Image 1: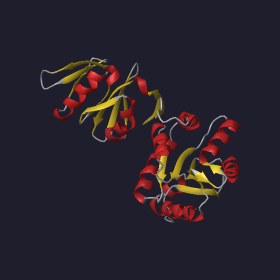
Image 2: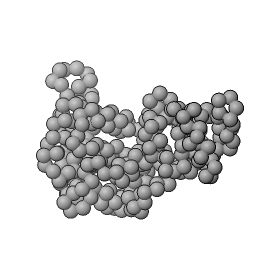
Image 3: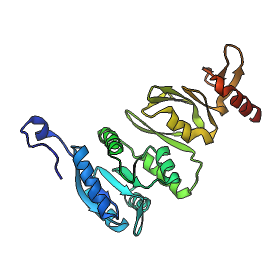
Image 4: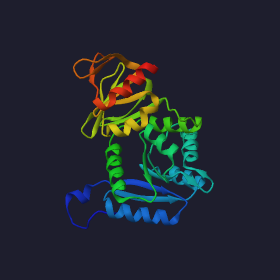
Length: 269
């Protein structure tokens, strides 16, 4: 499904398409997604389709696409089954995965902890465009795909309290223990992570997204710009408007509206 314009210019002559396949047991969804990709992107080429675990594995092994659009629920199993079987056969998945899913809280949370892209049904064109922009950046990077292993590990264990998190930066995806994150700081629409024995890591996601993921891991949003891991809180200082001193010796201000909540949490520690 080529999308290059017919104009005779160097870009179209040398522009390299990104190869992709669709695995979904709903023919209408596959048709609709292809139409959306055709309309809203100009460098994705759908080179194959499948509707089951069995045919999905076969088409991946035959075509080796750069990107796999993968539904979670298939007639003969799940998209996770496909990844498990490929990992067992080949050792590593070497394609970028974009899951297609209804809003399932556990799966979406697992995707976020694993820095894996997903598209919710029904597919929103703007969400699809954002996802494809990230995929285009990722295709050009050297990637170990360890975050897919992390996803499979979490799905396998069926735990809800994920111990590791994948952070996608401009130079690739890196895995960290959640317990090693000291604090996170908002940088407009980005989030800077401060991690034990590691240089700061800048992520192109908002602090609110990480607040939702990390609150149950002992993190607390004490200021509009600051999310802290209470395990690394050294001191609570009431002077100068109120601030905390963290284990990395940084002073973090406390919003007036957060003081009472923080004091309660400290008493409970």
